[in-house]
Image (cartoon, rainbow, N blue to C red):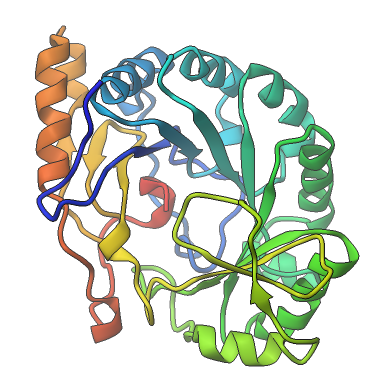
Amino acid sequence: MTGLSDSFQRPINYLRISVTDRCNLRCVYCMPEEGVSLMAHRDILTYEEIYTVAKVAAGLGITKIRLTGGEPLVRLGLPDLVKMLAGIETIDDISMTTNGVLLAQHAAALKKAGLRRGNVSLDTLKPERFNRITRCGTLEDTLAGIEAARSARLDPVKMNMVVMAGVNDDELPDFAAKTITAGWHVRFIEHMPVSGSGDIKLVSVGEMKKRIESLGSLEPSRLDVGNGPARYFRFPGAAGTIGFITPVTEHFCYQCNRLRLTADGKLRPCLLCEDEIDIRETLRSGTSPDELKSLIEKAIACKPQGHRLAEGSGRQGRPFSQVGG
């Protein structure tokens, strides 16, 4: 196995795989209210095709995989894919991002198959507000999924809250308090201006901290709760942690270590850039591993140095539900 790096000498060891564009929620920051056009079933990569890409990528230096969607758990047989990926010798970490609605049904099977960790999208602790943000979901289902994941020891289970001004930012202290009372690992994420997300306004990390510290002073956390861009803190004595992900005000492009594979077989070097390399037809034409390696290396070579969200250059292409945000 060799190491991968892009044109800016950033090591690339992390593959995010979108297994479906379908979702059982319709969150306001992820897709427009009218929904999006769904991919044809024939255009979605099979589990065997996903495995082929992952195995070749692992041979190049990918060691970590995250499964995303849409909502990954709406695709049947996901534990089967996890088991396949866990059998790749050099993959040492398989995780998943989910809305949690179906997690209670699948957490134990996913753990048994080889899933190590889970992130759950949760933007409010208020049932009525949850329904407004997701447009169709119920808070009870997601909370049950979180508890099932914790019981299955998909550790650490991290709760991702997209902080939106005038929508849910008043709940920052409530989420932060959960790190003390329930041992939650909570990550506060700056909202990114993207196509279909309406007029949602940004709450900066500085403002987030100011409101959270009404509960007490934060100190840097020494707990190892992830390998992504979040910076972690905790209240003294708290079992849980607080992370901040700041794609707009303090972007982390300089340390980006990831490549994305969309559900319809596109390699995407950057979430916020529309450049993609189609590998589906190559896969289905009986390509050799060397040809696939070449396409993966080409995609990594295309990674931009950074995005321009802070300059007001919002992403206008495919909604996050189609690229595995």
